[in-house]
Image (cartoon, rainbow, N blue to C red; front, side, top):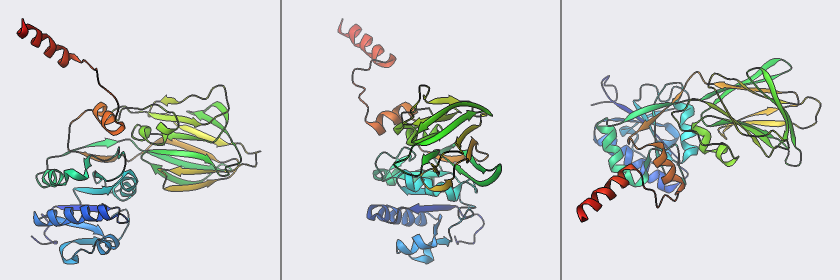
Length: 316
């Protein structure tokens, strides 16, 4: 099989090359997938950093078309690396398979010690994928559109100066809701509900729920509660024009837009979702318990109660 074979299966590999363990796992994936006859594609710079034999891999420059034609993208690192990879895969609609080398790694599906299982699942196509809601973000100033971007986890409006409070008016569906003096406002997706939204005191929303979240950060106001709205709603955050405080829009902690006084940020459901690969069918509840190491001792669900009754009958 050659790289020009139109029937070849292409897999994109992206890694946190600044970490030795990620480089080791990436090399393992590349060699194993190549051994099984799959064409491995990498960013040219990362292939050089991994010191791979360039004759064994396909290299491309960084850009929105980097993953075009790939059946999936294997991402080796933490959630930050997966968010970086989403920038490359979203336009091509390439599913992401995260291999966690970070701390919690909520976006990842596999752990670094499951490499052999993960490779086998890829080779034998034993995986599915699910679509995750994104948000499209527009920034206006003086009535004109000045920036447009997107986010998988969240779009957060934050104060630019630590010593100054941000004065904002927030609205839902074109109607004003409340005015806050705050450190910022997080507009999150269900996928991002376990990220910045969680740290800001927002609710955890199951990925299967289609909704948008708005959470104030350290707001000085009587009405400053996290809100969950319909996926068809439009969230708006306006910086008061008469204040001297400016702000910054952060999307997934990666893309920024400066916000002068009077700027308006609108957040709505994204036109393009992000696909995440699934190797397991475990419910999201189990993922929460595992990732946060939640105490569940003493739980007696239906299965446990049934076994207890059966053991009691046997003892009798």
